[in-house]
Amino acid sequence: MASKFASAVDYGLMLSKRIYYGKGAPTAPAPDPAAMSRSPDGYLPTAPMVYAVVPDPTAVDNPDVPSYQPYVHGRCDPPALVPLQMHEVAMEVDCHLDTAFVSLAGRWRVHCIMASRRCDCLVAIPMGEQGLLLGIEVDVAGRSYNSQLIIVEDMEDMSAEVAKAKEGNFLNSQTFMFKVPQVVGGSTISVKANWSQKLTYQGYQFCLRIPFTFPSYVNPVGRKMPKKEKVLLNVNSGTVIELLHNHISHPLKDLRREAGKLSCLYEAEAPTWSSQDFKFSYSVSTTNISGGVLLQSPSLHDTDQRDLFCFYLYPGKNQSGKVYSKEVVYVIDISASMENLLMNVKNVILESLSRLTQQDSFNIIAFNNEVHLFSSLMEPATPEAISNATQWISANFIANGGTDILFPLEQAMNLLAETTGSIPFIILVTDGAVENEREICNKVKDHCSSGLPICPRICTFGIALKFLD
Image 1: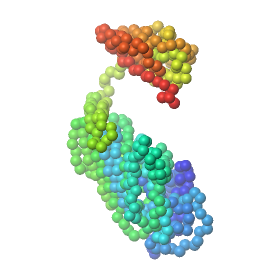
Image 2: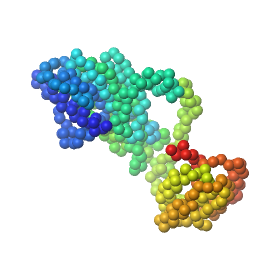
Image 3: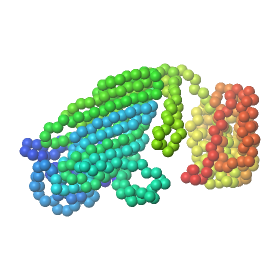
């Protein structure tokens, strides 16, 4: 799909050479050397874009100054995509911890379709890391369009409206596209898009990247027009610790700076639109581990009236602290009901073993009505021991019998009873409930209150075939 899209844009740019912009004006936007030398995939959107969808090439012309170009026979199949020229762009970014909420507004003109004709317009919104579209508004020639959240239970009652909304889809994992129908040549399209995306954490700093690289062919041609770019950035780290911004792609000016908060503004009249993504990184100036809890009450009209909380930790730059090794006992249910689940469980256990270091140790207990122990002692997580464990799992993970959780769990706790210099874990995996749950909980409670040096952390995983699928 991406290759077909890029080929349609390539053809659309060829068609745009037909447009006459008046005496003394260039016949087409200045070529982009990078685009000319790269593969067709290079025409994928690297910033919010709007394209005229052109099935009939005879419609391509300047809506203000007809050029009376020679007639073009045939139709474009698939339709060509002519990038529209952008006249304004503004972006507001609110960063909270590791999430950025982006609001972008832009104006594009249908400069390539004669005034007596109409065409669909395709809007493409590329987003950054783990982008999630939150809302869209479009205004064009007195008409307004906006996205709407539909509850699954209401879809049957709104089947007609849902069918009309099938024009939206993803070009790739991070770029959403939708069509605006039947726009008159020469019209101006105003688009507002809201989305959220993640900040990555690298080298003790949060890094934000928003697609904001506009190709040269979206710069207006002909009359000189001011190109106003505006970016407002607000950062709330959730702490009262000073923020340090380390890398900035655009010249931001500080508006307000408080402990843990920062507001910056970039506003300029540029000869061309931004030719690079918007990038910003900041670090929390802390040496030791720090953190806190954020609380949020639901809005008045929210159907879910539960409060939300977010617990966060900053690792700090102090690397002198001790890194504790782990002692892990895997307690795995191999009863008859686990027959269709064991292959997935086996793969997950092997993946978990591969992530242990040679300073860690482990053991495996497989149980049904009986108990099968990989080793009588905790084994260091060496490549040889993990290889032996892999063979043992293949030989012993055979589903049969009933489910008795108490005895293998007691054995796991006994294996970890003398742990002092490591963090003990018990990983319990089962697919069923048992009748003596209260007895099991009381045994664990008594064990943890018996004066052990370190009480094991017990992680329980209740699984089912439907869940794994």
